[in-house]
Image: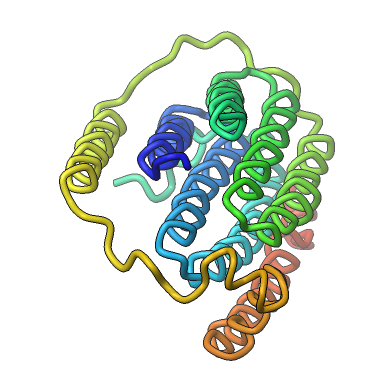
Length: 100
Length: 177
């Protein structure tokens, strides 16, 4: 039996990769992919925890996370297409309308 | 022993794929590595006795979401990014440092604390006698979690409408251009 700490370490690595992508990549599509990576790291923690305490609620929670991820990908990619039509690029540095 | 070996090999490959998703210049290659990442994660889920979650991971994530990403990459005809030097703005760096501090705190607490509630209702043997992973998950999902389930269907409906409205061609915009 593998200790849960190893699963948590793997999830941490995945989540930090996703964080780095969200913060430092300038391609909007890559930012969305990094968000998917972070959500998957959370899924891993939920499933590992569910196995540890013998409770299925963690696996149910993964379904809701997958639902939210699918919605987020659909709306996010629609926004990417709308922004590409308007600016002709998907670089995040063009999106400074809300910057203070 | 072989289970440990498989886990560490999968974990190593997941780490490699995650790093490649973030660091690669070409969005298509990043999407391919994302598929690999999700498949390997499905393998980890299966090794954790979460078979239905593993199947959903492959079907929904690798089958639907990444294909959606691929479609948009093809639609926008995105090539590899140019070689711009990496600039690291201060606010982003602050967020990164805070994230690492948060993870360190959580990790320390987890390593020093006790795992709560060990010995719950659904051990793998209990799930097996109850009729398998999928059956048991359905039983829990449609009794205890029925309202979150219904609300998530409303969320999907909203997302569909939002995606259509956002991606629709704005007629005034086209005339203006």
